[in-house]
Image (cartoon, rainbow, N blue to C red; front, side, top):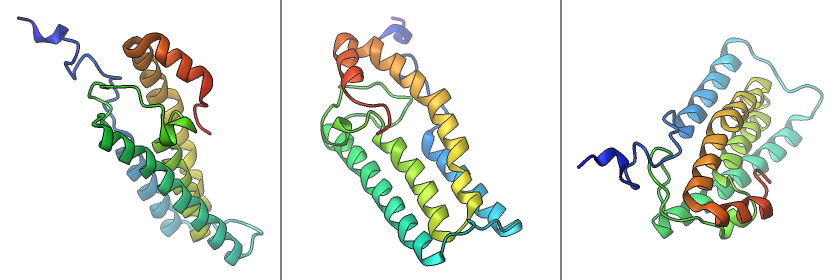
Length: 164
């Protein structure tokens, strides 16, 4: 029997996102910190205390939103890894607010950390992360979910925003 055609084969029944978002997040974070160390580039014209407060709130809120989505997936037994099949469409909890709460969290953590540290480099790392998510990851995931869940996903897609 040819197992490559089975519906739950992770190689073929998945979004096919092999470059995992947490790895790109870590790469962006490290790159931002390295650039800040090598060529300091401060956020201009905003008091440090304000940057610290705003950045911390943004990063903590992003982390909480990301973990809300991740915890819900884990509790429901849904695969988080982007190379594994989706066992169900989740439209509750954080997924009622955003179709991508974990990715919104990554972006908020990068931008918030950069603001809190006063590093424009770190804030700017949210740009390549957003491009990677918006041009590579999300289109693949959405096409996959449309194939996997059909009309249910289309209804969900029309009623819940992609980001926030």
